[in-house]
Image 1 (cartoon, protein in one colour):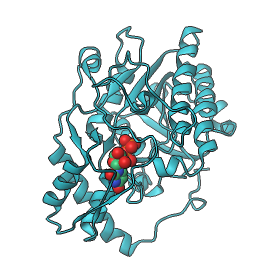
Image 2 (cartoon, protein in one colour):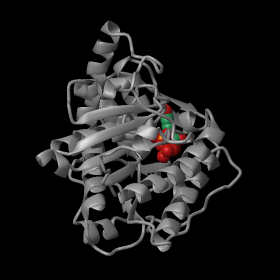
Image 3 (cartoon, rainbow, N blue to C red):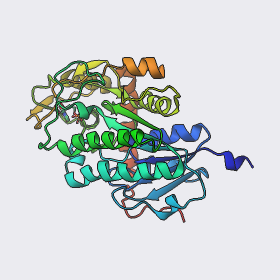
Length: 340
Ligand code: UDP
């Protein structure tokens, strides 16, 4: 029957911001999707619209623990594993640094083992943080990075670097097929309002009439990629058959200061808020912009959504969330039941 040919993807971190948007794209391709999430930063609300979707399942599990037996002895073969499991916002990943490091190291190791057991292709969601506070600009994949291994960001940066190492060792040992995306700052609908990132902070502050907080002098730069572009890049990376064997940067090369971002948010929301300056966090990278020539060449990918368009959609999302949040209490971790 057709059912036997169904493509099954596992999305670890599927209840998160990028993971849930990716899940929607995979389901739209006609695939079956298993979402694995510990709901620490992922939210059931991101998946509520899939409650009646027969091709979608949720497993409430933490990748630092042995994987649920249902995954390892499932009759259904998983063809693709996307590993997006990890808190990605500095305040969230620093809240429990040991867990962050282990999520990246143990979690990636367990999911690679699962990939081997199923003969699944494995995509590791890595990060621009592997470049740390970069000494070269823009950042190319060939740059080895400038990371403080003992600072407060190290649990994430070094965890993601170790996860890349595990992934490429797995490839060298010919245990399976892997892909590594180095994801640069991504924003869009389904970011958490309390994510702590500059985009979500600035929008929620502007919408509630509060001052926008800028860390340091606001002169540091980032390059912001809209989530639909990122999901497209991740899909292309997973599906391409080119023999390219390195990590690939995915991000939008349009670079701006965070001060400029704040000004845009004020203009697009029409808010009359001001700007308040706060101390710059330790090891905060000064500049970041991806060189995406490899992604362009190998995947035929480049971002399409302009910053203003993406910000408008994100502002609309946060305006809606504010209205909904007033009516529906958020579902908490523990109230999410994996399907029987
Ligand atoms: N930032 C800021 N105000 C905020 C949150 C962040 O000025 O309310 C700064 C932060 O110090 C960093 C930049 O904005 O220089 C991007 O921070 P974010 O947490 O969004 O991403 P990441 O540091 O992971 O690139």
